[in-house]
Amino acid sequence: MKIHNFSAGPSILPQEVFDEASVAVKDLNGSGLSILEISHRSKAFVDILDEAVSLVGELLKIGSEHKVLFLSGGASTQFAMVPLNFLNEGASASYVDTGTWSAKAIKEARAFGNINLLASSKEDQYRHIPKGYDIPSGDAYLHITTNNTVYGTQFREIPSSPIPIVADMSSDIFSRPVDINKYGLIYAGAQKNMGPAGTTLVVVREDMVGKAERHVPSMWNYKTHIAKNSSFNTPPVFPIYVSMLNLRWVRKNGGIEAMEKRSMERAKLIYDEVDRNPLFTGTTQKEDRSRMNATFLLADGYRNLEEEFLKQCKEAGISGIKGHRSVGGFRASMYNALKLESVQLLVDVMRDLERRKG
Ligand SMILES: *Cc1c(COP(=O)(O)O)cnc(C)c1O
Image (cartoon, rainbow, N blue to C red; front, top):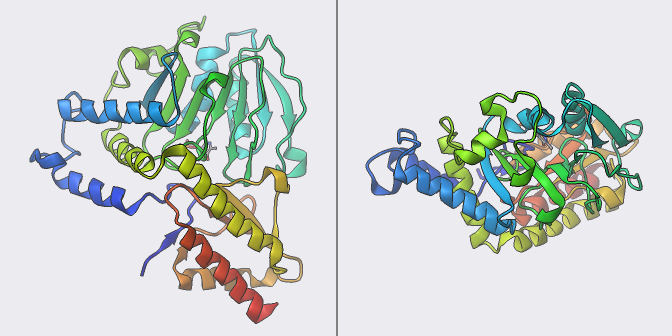
């Protein structure tokens, strides 16, 4: 049976990416060698890495001021690596707290310098994106999480900021256009919307690196990775390869504009049903709803149907719909490769529940 994967991450990738990657595990481009056994210094891999870097540059319209890196350690390593490199002792950085992941980034950053917490939606159980705060122009950077994977909210508009923005785009990178000039650094763990787990995309403005006053160990220094083209040590060869295949797929299927259009269609389909169906209710402020992770609950009076709904989903071939353990309810993660027909199937199951129990 075909399984419709709504998992928040690691998550769905296009079938053709799985097909190509599985061929390369046995024999990369007819070389007689597996992608798993080739040297990271071989021409075959250097070409793959170069293509991945250039696809990121093309898709996100990145100019020469920014460098594209493929690192390891996940997005979580960036929570500390950003302040380690950019926040000198005694200096300040601004953060906006919009959920679990921003809170973790803030916690890590506090060890390095002064943190200005400009706004937080924690008191509101992170149901909205705060707006209307002042950004201190003397701070080293402003950190935001553009899409809150756990709570299902998303910055519809990126704040206009007098200082470079550092953005955790783990769960919405390559789903909408990026105005690169706003950003000092963008990071994203691959396993949400770019590729398999094991590599982290970093796009960094080169003139911001190398200014730390403290000692920064080589592996945690952006400067090292820029100088060595992400190959100071052995890079995550296979995750970079599969990410490259997926970025090729994104380009072939219309690029970022097409991905954004598809994400809007999926989001409209699911949220229209959440709003229409009396058995369900949304969990977040409507204007801040995420197009990538749609969170919803059973409405009052229908809460006892949770197990039944999950069972119906399972029988229909829908996987990964259970909400994050800290929020409960349901979460439909709808990354680039998810087809509209998968969302339609989920909507059909919701309607079926209404017919039987409403
Ligand atoms: C999943 C996620 C992370 C954590 O990523 P790791 O690669 O597991 O460290 C960080 N930020 C956001 C927004 C995420 O969705």
